[in-house]
Length: 323
Image 1 (tube, rainbow, N blue to C red):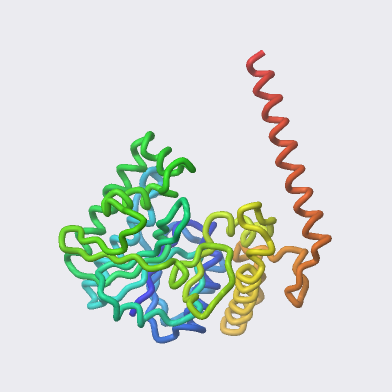
Image 2 (cartoon, helix red, strand yellow):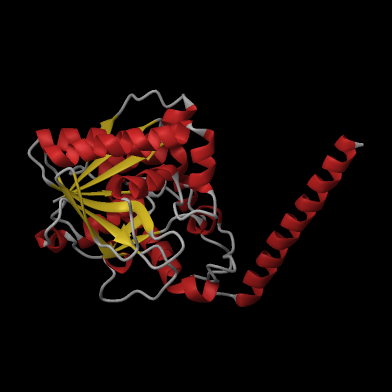
């Protein structure tokens, strides 16, 4: 099987070394393809040199155009699907870069489907950050339709706002498009769209996005949304994603990132820090990965105070402008 990952820009590329190391450590038989654009960091160049089995494919989409940039994931995925099928690959896991592989997932391809997606019993039930594809002509047609509908949602201001709104069950333009094409219903797990069989799996298996305990079912964790503020900026957790709920998954990521850093340094014989990968290990975690709750509470207090001050300042500026 193949893992296919699309990465645009330097911001998220720093998470790539951790993801690649997790695949190397836990699913070493898989092939890996990276489709990327606009990445020029020193760390990325070093990562390319220390994972020689990984195939890096630089793309040339017009991502300066904002609508194309917002839809870069779908552009990467459709291109990857076409190229991988031409090379004879069929079983492919498409995934975002903010993920970790904990176990081999190849056995999921024994299930009957053309496209496997994850589902959870929450307000936003779908997340397209990790999906499994058995590539064939019908699947390519589906992906083209999905890409086109996603770009239409991005270009249409009303649809774009609706896709991002908390008032609707989408969580993004591509997920809104996926939802629409399937005529998605929470209680329905299988769909047939023009000959393409799509099947939903509980997100706990290969796209765990929630702050929960890691179990024997957990194969891939997806550190989406609010996780990135913590991982990339060393920030604090939120009321919806608390430190107590998130601690196990968070410490796992920090440990894997540091292991990956040591691996890269040993292979490339260079000096690197996590900060060069855009990852920040917070001061409230000590060397043993134990949380200093006094430090955490102080950082959280400062962060909340900053938000309040900014809110009052913006309110004051708006009043002055109106006056």
